[in-house]
Length: 424
Image (cartoon, rainbow, N blue to C red):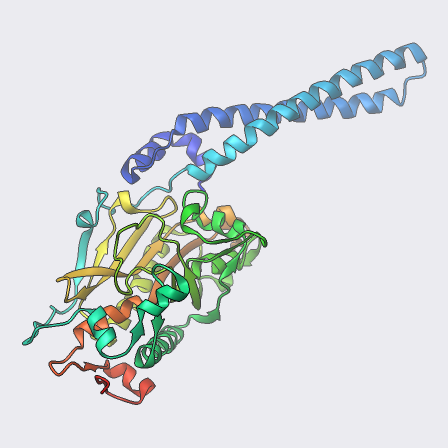
């Protein structure tokens, strides 16, 4: 959510942000509704003052005729006040809906475009190495090595259900532990985050109201299954005032994640790339209200994830996501894309974003600055590792001619072996 005063003073910036993000939003309508809201509030405040003054005056009137007339006037004021309050109650929900629709302003460095092809490459790691043998895709490798049962997964959980087995299970757990170890050593506080969240956390992070169809709801409990640890972590300090001394506050959280993938019908229907249930280690930062610092921390988060991919020795690239693919809340997003040999292309494995105070305004997370002023924090988040998706790149890039798959060197001590071999 943006500051309404900023919106009133900069309608052209909001209009341009909506155009660039390909968002259907009428800023002039919001300004008009806001004007009615403010006028209504002013009238109500004025009538309440009249009501209070009239009530005090009546108590001092001795003449019964004059008192009766004053009571009638007070009744008229109350009726008018009730009418204005009723009118305002109709205006406020419309104002709130429009405020939730306002897009954040993308950074000037964010490219135009609406597709993956229009993302801008920032940098690339080492080039992928060619195979000297016919390479298998990750589904073939999972099956030949006995690492997953997708058929029984579907039987149990429906479409996109899966079981990971044997070394794939241990490899996933090794990745979580390695990632937590790596990021914690950089000064991030480790957290196990809940997957059940209240609705206000989804509104606060900007997932609602637009993405309701992609979130699982527990109808009887008025709770939702979180799609990322960003959602519960952002709710951690909701309605709190922090001290500037603790900022930037850095977290690294592990959690199960759930997505309906409602808008992905027909995409990635085979394998483990796009799933309803998965696990992530997420980085999140609450920072002071400073754009330059947010830019620096955004680079830090991204570098943390790159260091993990570098340690895993996976070919990857970093791209700046085009404005038309950004969510309403985002100022800028980098995607880290790993090389998938079977598809001969890079595919998104990590996402790294910053939001300025868009989320913290919704969640009312402020800090007391050293000068005594209250300011809204800035927020940033980043995928440190997402499983089982990252297994696709590991399995395919580390496969050997004999059908085995080497285990990345940094994970070998976690598994106690150097390779996953075909089962006899």
